[in-house]
Length: 165
Image (cartoon, rainbow, N blue to C red):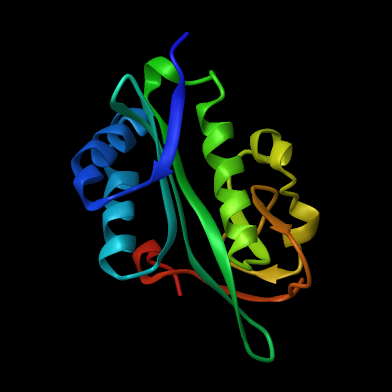
């Protein structure tokens, strides 16, 4: 059985990450978003999955602000991409779980995602936790996960690359 390894992304991975993102989403939007987040210095944690020396998965957590009485530093999970031929085999789960482990160890306390509640709910994300946030993306797909004391209200401030204010 071939094992999948997870490691921190490096600059040498850029082209392969772009390819995985493009293939996973059948367009370049997410790959371009990843490049813009990195270029702007807003990447907090970026991991890749490798199998047989090929990059087959990618996840990025970027800096997200929560403005309430002051700015609280949180992270946004977006995007996560797996090579189409390997989707549904637990690679995305492994990337997200390792990302969460590293983020918690680094002292992060809040992660926000915009995505399928059935998928992200498996990791503890809920809309109930995100319902108090002001966001252009407010709705059932906006979910949050807290690992400690973190705001439950305030305006979400995404990195510039997301194109929202």
